Length: 341
Ligand SMILES: *Cc1c(COP(=O)(O)O)cnc(C)c1O
Ligand code: SF4
Image 1 (cartoon, protein in one colour):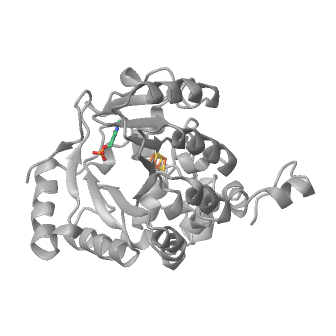
Image 2 (tube, protein in one colour):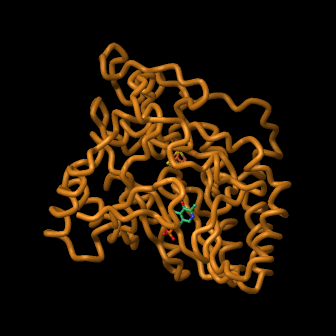
């Protein structure tokens, strides 16, 4: 069943890019997703919590890659609002990485040496249940576009900043005219040399990579890096591989970050398959994150000793460039913290 499009007049429909239509059709009702997957809502594992502040959100292009009839599907697990989320687990808190304390007025999160992270928007195309951003009030003061000028002024005033990271939420949730405007402003700051986008959209909504997006990417003088986010090889289907091709043709560097997740990718075969598939798509693995201990995500946790054993198994069977760096994010640290194994 295709949900209705409220108040969408004809001319607006013609102008809006395809990916925005697709986003409007994303699954937002648990029952509807289960029906699509041929799953019985009475299955105990599929009881859904009522998560009003972080509801289900799954683009159809992503749901297509889930195995029909499998309650344990690793893609489904990433997005399913399980009742386990309501469990209070000691140590799992709402601001797990300390961003609330670090955020500055203009949407600039703290600064690692030479790099600054700009919260471009709070919105995402998909709602990942393990995400620390689920409790983050991005829609409040941080994501407001009016504050971009403050951020741009801060970047312009600090010549030590050579790289600007657009993050979110997902920065590609913004319309291309807004992104073009922001990137053009960054182009005008001489000491900024690199632009990085932390985005999951090319994975969950490959139609997002369209002519308009490529237009402003072509226009910028900045060396551009995409850090994608996929956790399982099956997230990279042929549509994704095709969508990434024009980025590769432009010499854009493609990296991937993953989160180590119980029941999704917590074994060496799955992680190795992910690295291999990423390479086939022209993407190199960058980070493998230990879970941020965010409230509602405890059922995804993999212990540190287990993670270390997985890294040893991975490095024994893959070339070094296909082994991601195992990291943990600690509040107040000047960089991601490597976890030795
Ligand atoms: C992860 C992160 C970066 C980028 O770190 P790299 O090691 O360059 O990938 C920058 N700023 C913040 C706040 C981050 O969390
Ligand atoms: S910020 Fe990334 S991980 Fe978090 S919900 Fe959005 S897309 Fe998912």
